[in-house]
Length: 114
Length: 113
Image (cartoon, rainbow over all chains, first blue to last red; front, side):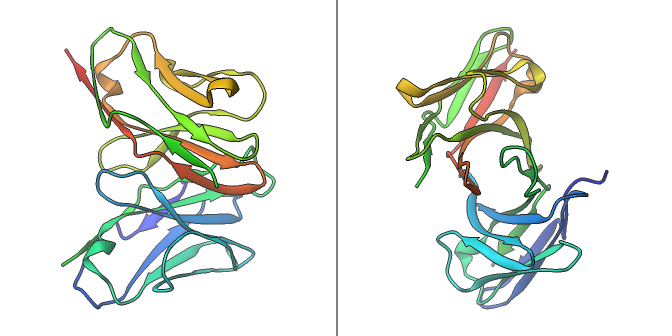
């Protein structure tokens, strides 16, 4: 079992650019959540996808958008990048029939905006 | 909305000494509670979870936590610190009907030889 995988591991962009991050969930999981972890902070919930739809959203602007594919993998898109978007982006997967909201995290994508 | 408070961003502990990390939560419903550990340049690994069964929860690597409803707390302990325990630790809360996690700011644990 490969667990949750994310790509790329690191990314450098400049202000105003757009970025796409990718996530493959753990085998058997159908729900993907995305979190932003700024330096020295705890992860903040961005949004969650289930059945190819956004089911929940945290307090993030519309510049943050996502997608879930039929194979349950997911993308996070960020438009018009700001310096403050520099962070570690974590993907977590879970199963709707699973145990007590337990989420499994990937290693993250480190985004640096210059 | 749920929230978590972790005080003391950096915690230093001597090797072999007790590790105690404090977590207080706020939730309008009986919550699920979690402790995660994050090693440098890695994602989050679940240490243990409370899901309304036993109030004393045992996790991996010798860690345990006790849910105290009256104190709205879920403190993490380990009797004897090991060098490999140096990492960042996050407490998180979830509403059972709402599969999203709210994290505290974390505790960076340093183990002194």
